[in-house]
Length: 360
Image (cartoon, rainbow, N blue to C red; front, side, top):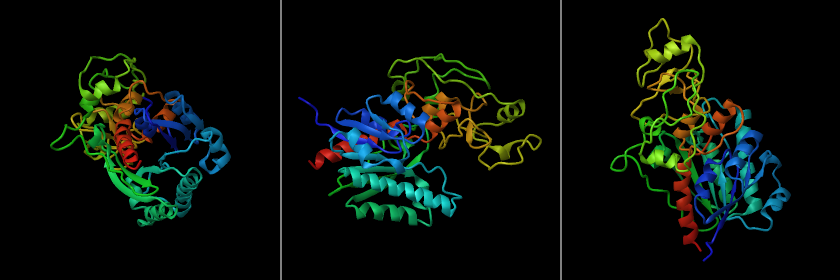
């Protein structure tokens, strides 16, 4: 018996972290994706080769382009959210640019008219522009006929080894039956996945070293997930740092940061959570594109006293080891740091499938 399929379009697709969850269910058919950055679009295609990638600015994405890839097929779900890394120092011009991206999302919804959409964004969007931006976004979506629900989900509660909060806004054209996924990890449930769990099979490295050989066959649930394809280890290269930074990293104990350093080696600039070491037996704090840059974020390996490899960053986002990234090392870190964690997207996709079935 043929499985009924729901058609999906992914906007602001990145490397496909959100698409990943939907691709794991045969009931979903991802038809098209839109991504502005060429290298990131190539990475998406490497992981989702059957999807039509429209590599352009969403401002230029028009009905003719969409019609040519949809080929007469209706769309059931649109997923995605404009990238917004920081809300702490946004001026009016940047605010207007970002508001425009939300309006472009709405414009594409009006062209496609899906039954439902999933709008994902950083938790800072709730307070941006004195809470007015998120209120306006909801009003714009309601204006075109969607009933809305939103909730803040933390990826750590779904088996991701990272504290990463995201706003998940779900709209349905008609009754909205969507129920947010139950947490699977935390108090009274499975224990949180820690760095020790996530990195247990990765060989130790020093600054500038590379070793693409798994060091053991660790049997924990997270490792089984990321190594399910049986692929070889790749991208496990420690960034090369100067002697002074290495001395700083080696002086820190787990959880310590710049302000805990002896005065003679303490950097004069940087926020309090920079030059900071992670915890071995806790999940990571939220990672960004700067996960290899100790002067910008908490990203120092707690055991090896070095910045993290690309593979370690991908692990903290729950990307399987066979997931491909493309471009320079800086571009690969951007692709990872901006992504929706695959384990979170899988939990969301499962609930979307249940919701769509319930309104048939």
